[in-house]
Image (cartoon, rainbow over all chains, first blue to last red):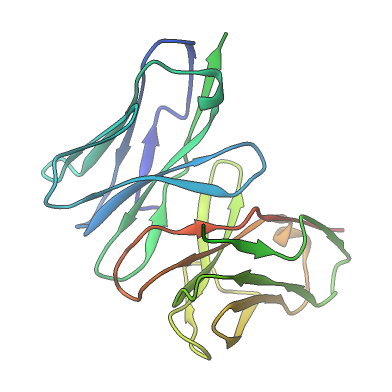
Length: 110
Length: 114
């Protein structure tokens, strides 16, 4: 069963622009995480936001969490070619499983 | 840095073969996971383990089994491979049970079943 669903499925922007990806989920969560996956490789953890947090920053990344709307957003500022990848949200709940969405493919045009 | 190593990057097997996918982590993590990834479906949890000799079914365990005889090693077994098990398989580990902490992934094994 899919818990998180990312939107959009694909996003293409110019280098230097900001990229925003959204994630919606269905049930109560303890935390929400964002991961990046370069083509054909494993996933790399980017950031974790707990259910009692509303916003978190890490370098050029900004994550927000709205538990009332069951949604999160990932903002990448001043995008670079190296940001081209797929981005996944993952939710952790009291069922003790981390469940992933289907991802957003981000392409950065030079 | 935590290292999660999957034994094969690419694997080609025939229908009906028994297939073993091996995963080793080097940071004494309690939790280990096996996911499969298919286009448009994201990552789906097959099995996970919170301790040695312990296993729990994920969302899609049918056709798979697992083994965790040592803390650092978690094996995924396809008892009789079928073409619909052609997929990218990803192993992951995390530090503590029930903590929901971040996962560390291996590089993946692209399995093709012919």
